[in-house]
Length: 225
Image (tube, rainbow, N blue to C red; front, top):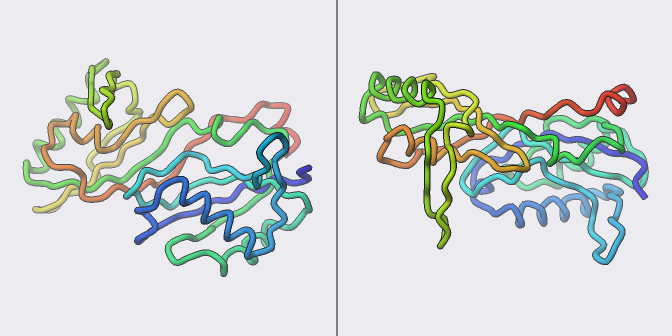
């Protein structure tokens, strides 16, 4: 039975950007075990450590503001949680913040609503053309879109997945786009698809997730934090 729920903020970089979500979960599980973090075990048919990540990170994406909830069977201070866990993490994985949240708050995954990205693309069309494409995209009320993933063709309104989009930097070779995309249980926007919808021919050079936005928890639960 869990007696405490710690929410941790973390980032990943380097080669760890290329591991799958499932491998990330296994990596955290090993780190908790080595750090002797008293993670609670789920009930039911399959007994698993009770921790969850806010939203899966696509392979190849670095990040700095990811969120994770860890349920503990014995209380420990968030400071000690970070102190114990830090040295047991592989290079490229770092916990930067930890704090208590109420046990009865909704699941972390259900609270995630948006994700903010920095996306570096080829600047070959020129900054003026990219800026014009961004403005045209944001002026649209809707934009039907489809792409093939494995053997499945997905059709959706890509404009509805973009909350904000702007060109923040450009050089002769590269341009950086900042985008805030939908990221909730009903679906998530994909930066590479937004880049394609702008008419840019080449895929992004790099994608970095800056952070996740959460919907406000219920008033009753928030008052007990």
